[in-house]
Image (tube, rainbow over the protein chains, first blue to last red):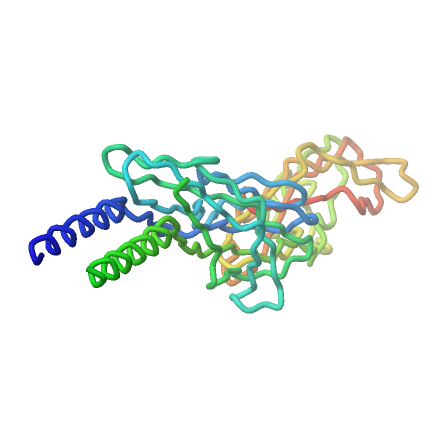
Length: 159
Length: 171
């Protein structure tokens, strides 16, 4: 009876082990999103930061040659090799002058690479996710360093 | 036996719960942007070539950015020179940023009262030349030029209120 009990226990523990063998998905931030330096010289407009980290503008926004730091946000997703996953980004997000305001700018139209579904590398079980977005600047935007310590959230889910 | 089933059930529930929680993960991305002060330019002092003497041959006089004149001695003759100044502008903007300076590409005319005679002003020069730096958020920009007198240039006071347009841009 005792042997049977141990065997059963071992069997179920193995079952449980098999269920838990799928490596949990995780995501870590490697780099912040940086729109760099911007001049609102002749009216409102936008700065589009691509997932590759390049900038373009619309409207009255000008980008001076002293760029500051410009980078798309970078994350590393880790999990089960070969598994696919979905990436969820926010729709918008607000930056505040010196992190507190009152002046603010809206960040929206997030873009990403990979664009829809990610696939974890068969060998390493990792994938790099790059995130860009659009910064909306008013024509009379107060000069200052804008940020938001709360950050925007990127969520990944196994499909 | 009951014990085993209970234990099994507990293990199953525990592992199932764990598996669900591990299928999703979230990270936070901090975002930064810097907006700098727009660049502005304001005129402080007009460009003044001072008094010039009309000569039979005419000629060109260069007004340097330091406010001195060079050229034909006969045109610059005399000690009653009047007001001689390079044009002076103040450029304001973001501290330590640099900017490009665009001077008039060609030349423009100054006219006497009644516009019966003109002289050409061109070959603009500036200090700083081509690009400036907003150390402490400001820089003084000086602009000189060359004025050309015709032979026997008609005497009078020659002006142009709008000809000298200087454009600055962050580069």
